[in-house]
Length: 327
Ligand code: ES4
Ligand code: ZN
Image (tube, rainbow, N blue to C red):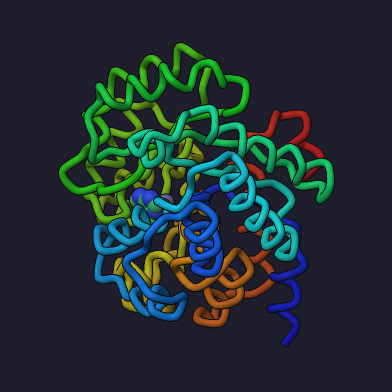
């Protein structure tokens, strides 16, 4: 069977990766030692053993604890560089990286330290690996809209270093409309707009991400299938969904990969893509997501592989002229 080889070799874009979610336990321990940060786990093995999640919140608690070792510009560079090495090995030729500045600025890390470290890694990945990479600043939805607005203001001196904004963290109880004003300001600034919606939250959150935030992509969005009129709208508008199969299984959104609704999403004509989300926590990077998903779906073959790769470029924020060279 040559399908896994095709999946690994094909050029692809990754559009849903939280760079803090690429922090492997080995690097967490190395940075903890380098920075004199105390960890709640005695070893790499003990930390990895704690990666048994029941829902989004049980994951987020450990994910924010892991990020506490990031203090210096070099730490952010090292984290992103390790991701780019994995991405290059998976034939990812374009990546749009989410980062969570509030996770760091709340601990006293300056905004400039975060953005400069990540931006340096993106620039070097392009120069040395030929990967085009950009940053998307995410607001933490469990915090207030005022906190998001203050974060945006703090980031404006680095405006040229990020292409857009997103919305992540605990979804339930924090609907998109909570952030209506800050996203309106982001649109005025010419930023690209995305939001997590319909991962754990209801289809109504996907609708308000579209209508209130005016997003250009939906991150996850898998619960759209509960609302057939919404599915028709997403297809008609060619609104991309950045789907993360291994993440969905680890966070118990679907029981197994064979139960995932990706086949229904593609059949409905949606611009669905495959992404890794938080690869250090969910058991794999891009090619692991592709190979394991296709292994669980015997009805899928080369046609679906090509469709998903094509969708990833269509859904990307690369300038239209450069996109034509890919699609
Ligand atoms: C996340 Cl899987 C997921 N969902 C929402 N927010 C997140 N932040 C990092 N991973
Ligand atoms: Zn995510």
